[in-house]
Image (cartoon, rainbow, N blue to C red; front, side, top):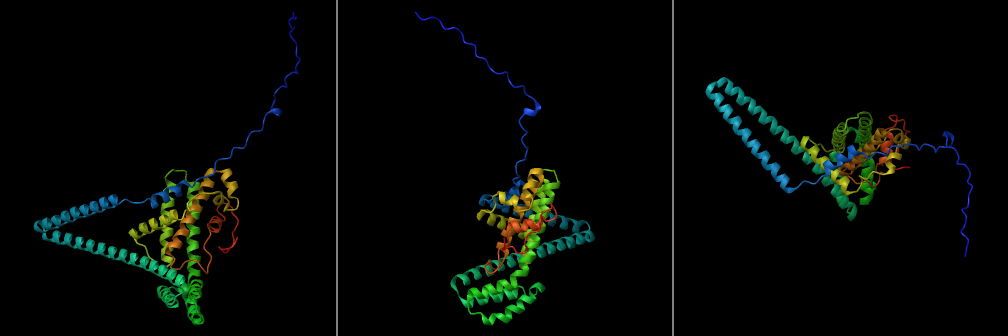
Length: 341
């Protein structure tokens, strides 16, 4: 018969007293990087596809409202003529002036559409000429470009050099590259300056203004103005309605090319951008919104530029944001050439 085991006493060391010197270090609280919500909202709003039913509804609603206003104005003028001829003729004159102003605005919008369509035709013709190697087609493209920028002072020197060197070129690609280098270079510089200014404005408003919808409204207005200026730089003029159509075209092109994703490169595109995002979420959000604005500007250049980028380097978002925000957040100055680094 086994004897029952006695309890065994196990001696343990005394627990170590806890104190401030033994506490775990407090982790650094780093705000999550921004997402560029203002610019994401602008891009989503502009690139949202419109349904045929919606277009039909708004077209019929506009026609109905216009018809009702026209009938009401007609009855008002006729009734006023019957009651008081002087007041009636005054009202008729004012209505006539309003209709005349509306026709002038419609004519301006039509001219704006025609100018933008001309840029599209020149771009398509340049792509076809480069693909086929047709020297005659390339010559027509160059003639159209020279005619398009004949009254532009900033292209005078380039047009004179193009006229001097054109006779020495016997290849379609070389002729288009020569035209791009001589005519597009000053226009590209002006377009880059517009993008840098818009990126700076959007980043500043996002970082300073705490209101939720203020940064969205500022981003929308700044991008609309930037796209309109880029179109004017390249020879196209966008009116009130044409500007919205151009904005939708640019944002749709941006979404189609997949260039709206926010990555770490946007924060690091500005020297010290990572530090700013750690110090303040608003600053990090401003940097990203500025970078997305620069991407919209590059897409606007691709849409409005009459020649594709071949001889000259395509603008890079990192360089545009670095120069645009230089001095605003203490960023270092980037290289002067977009194609480098």
